[in-house]
Length: 465
Image 1 (cartoon, one colour):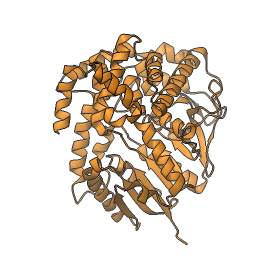
Image 2 (cartoon, helix red, strand yellow):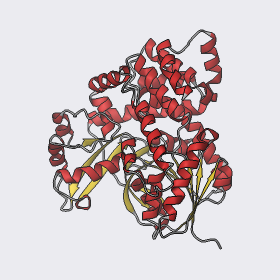
Image 3 (cartoon, one colour):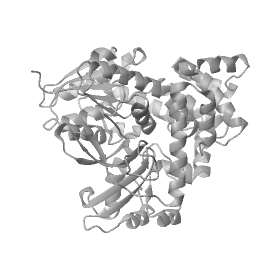
Image 4 (cartoon, rainbow, N blue to C red):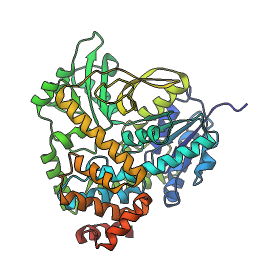
């Protein structure tokens, strides 16, 4: 009988992979990995080779004998896997640049997981994750799927709702960042505080208590205005209104800035968008990633470089690797995950996927009840979840009317003719990855819809790179 764990990472050529390897090496004594398979697509072959060789060097520098396999054949990798992690980006970073630049060219938020760009990322990603699930049903029906692919909450919901696959957990590093950064604000260590999270991926709130049961949320809120608020590297640090946070007595995640300070966040994004020396966040990330892969080529590099923290995914491994270790060893660790609600957040349906505190063990995630939200937060949450439901169904069915509904209901997209125009341009821009919308895209192109010249010009260097 074969012993040890077979682990597969789809999107293995990602710049995040060394962070993942570091996490597995750190936990090897409780998570005995036999082999790791890194999977990518043909367009990602070069990056897969570079990061795969570095991953092997990291294991070779450790005390453990683990073989890293590289392949473009997903089905070969998935055969008899125990855990499958997903961290892929359909269309690579070039697609993210379009998701940001096209909305911004019309004066609206262009962002990876929020607004118009986030919706289009879901349209491209959900069909692919559902194909992966179908392969898993045939090749590794007992495996757990641990998803880090954005938009993580919608992708995880689609896996359960449309893929009919319950052995899935969605992850994000944002809650981990908060739980690591905030204790120091009030002179505490992470283990001295108890965190309770509830909401959706990139749209959650949390409360904090000390080990004596005292609510210290307001203490942290007060200190957030004195220094580092623990915001991820990829979000402009625009302070929340202190009075708003004090009233709700909860701490919003960093991405709430796009909703609570929409005017200021949009102004900042437009400033970067219009400055060719800065560019959108995706263009900044592309530069950072290029620098990382140059480092990864160094045959002497056998550890995660410090520069990876600039990528915006710090502490990724703490979420992904600890989740897998907790399932494998039935540790019942507290981790914030996207999972089926089952009543933890009574303002949403039991079968909705939510991002909540949960105990992770052999049976997966057991959500911790958070309780009902106050009217303001409840209103936001229900709008956002139902917007997500429209996005997911449109991604599966290719229903253009439903895609338009999602755009109109999204708080970051001003409703009207411009919203429809942005949707149409994004569909055309991403047509290679949107076969479910093929008929509508052909109709739009036949009617003369094109991407604005200024966006086309901005995209030219991307295709030449």
